[in-house]
Amino acid sequence: MRSWISKSIVTFLTILALSYALAPAPSAAAPQAPGEQAGGQRRGNPNEIVPGVPKMPNPPGPAPKRDLNGAWIGPLMSARITIPAMTPAGEARFKQNKPQSAVTIAATNDPFVNCDPLGLTRGIISHAYVNKEGVWFEQVANRMIILQQYQRVWRDVWMDGRALPAKVDAKGFPDSRFYGYSIGRWDGDDTFVIETTGVDDRTWLDEEGHPHSTDAHFQERYTRLDQYNVQFVMTVDDPKYYTKPFELLKGTFYWMKTQDFEEVFCVPSDANAYRDTLAAPAGTGDAK
Amino acid sequence: MKSKLLTCLFVLAAFLFVCGSALAHHGTPAYSNKITELKNAVVTKFMWSNPHSLIYFDVKDDKGSVVHWVGETGAPTAIGPVGWTKTTLAPGDVITVYIFASKTGNPVGRLNHIVLADGTRLDDTVVGGDKHPN
Image 1 (cartoon, one colour):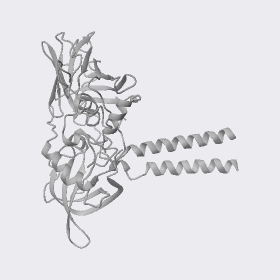
Image 2: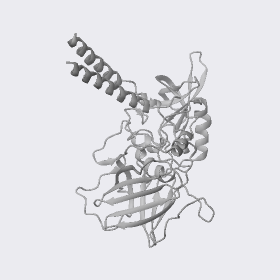
Image 3: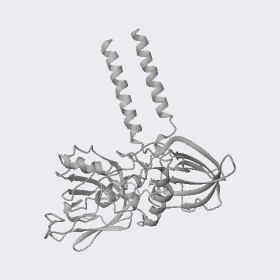
Image 4: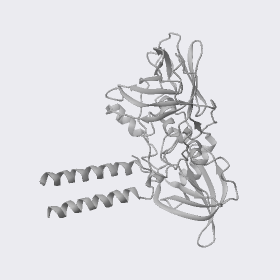
């Protein structure tokens, strides 16, 4: 009897595992917005770090001191830590966001679908982890300029001693911005630290629609490990919406040999065509 | 033996949970999970665009009437690395389309893959598994 039960369980598990493994790509029914799952049949090239980005000579040289200048691809090997519990205000805001994974494509209010600005975290971090897009650092006299491939956005990370605004969107204070207000400093010779606040709360933290408030404080740490690799981690502290600070993403950036980006725009007229000719006929409804 | 049985049940429950989570992550309710094959599809337009690239194509139905289809696939930076380019398709190209059609019955859907006239297969980025880090 016991043997029969055990055999039945093993058989069931085997069938279940096989049926799952051989299922006809249910993921193909998931139109992940910006970059889609990077699970396609990539043409693996052992000489490339990712498709189109050649590997540099190995071993890499030492990290130059206080220098991130140049074009990088990533984040690669990215990983996320579970987002902590939200406050009631955070939960309420989260329910307003309708990611493509939860609703039909015509019903989503994902900013990406309309080519709206992706904002700080999603524009540079969350969006990049599926498409592996480029970012360019260029330090000048009083700031670090960060140029982003997608939509050709730039950020000013001030290094002239100024403080971040104490608040935004209040009388006597500046307006919130899609990419916020940023200041930066070198922590030792290898790590550049960026502090950002005042990010427009219409942007999402990630593809799942996790929200942030304009009071959220973001910290990015870019550590140059060697000539061709930068380690990255971003933390979020948003007590208005989350019960504790958390690491949103960590990963690495790799040196781009060509130092040249393809042009990547989300063009509003293309988005209109997508909405009218595909999303609308595909149906609406299914709020999360 | 009882403890072994409980262990087995626990493993089973955990496995089902993992499978359920993985499958639940896949999706949009918009499209069927069943692949539809559309032979002799004549491309009328290819948009290499964001948020998603679009293929417009015509297919004759069982009655010989031309049906105007639209299929979406990944953004250029997503499908570029798997072999697509802006010039992969041109009006007049005859291809075979494998698509997850809309549940509405309208002739729109998400590509699984296409096969060009020379036999070249090009996949959508979501084919082959879910590598999303979330």
